[in-house]
Image (tube, rainbow, N blue to C red; front, side, top):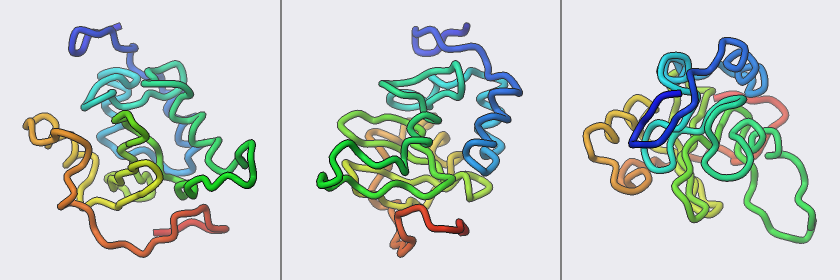
Length: 165
């Protein structure tokens, strides 16, 4: 166990946990995130609630990142309830900002395209995981992902029969 911001973080992720995550996601994790998981800690580092971990790693609140990913396409308990559409395969809820706001990571993009999820509304952002982490380290990431980085995008927000960029 290590310590980040005065809190205990999990040990680095095992090669098995990394391989399992990539098998479940169906895409490789961006190289930066692979290194952070295997060299720093299995989640708990980074802005706001911290980056979610893999198996046996850090979770900010409730189910793990991979458990949430597997639950995306399961129907809710009330079919009449209007729930926001699920993210596409390969897109992870990666950092909890609280109040139903999340940073999301698109693993279909080799460097990890970032998305912003705000109470069911989603926005693709003009930055990668590396850009986002740099903004955080430079003190330029005050809350979520700045709105000026959102890009216009017509990508359907559902799980199509076949995925592609």
